[in-house]
Image (cartoon, rainbow, N blue to C red; front, top):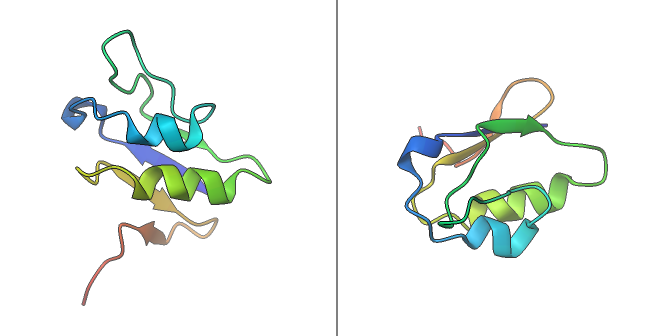
Length: 75
């Protein structure tokens, strides 16, 4: 699983960090500091929960085959 973050669109709600602080580090102003990461085994659920908590939907999650699993694509 891979997480990709469009950090330029982060407005600092910090919900991802509240849900999964070890995975979604913030700067002193509450904005995400990373552009993405490979999810370690055992962290998949928390990575997805953190992504789903973002109201701007700037966090995209891909499975191991490269398929986007969040946000859910329609169509």
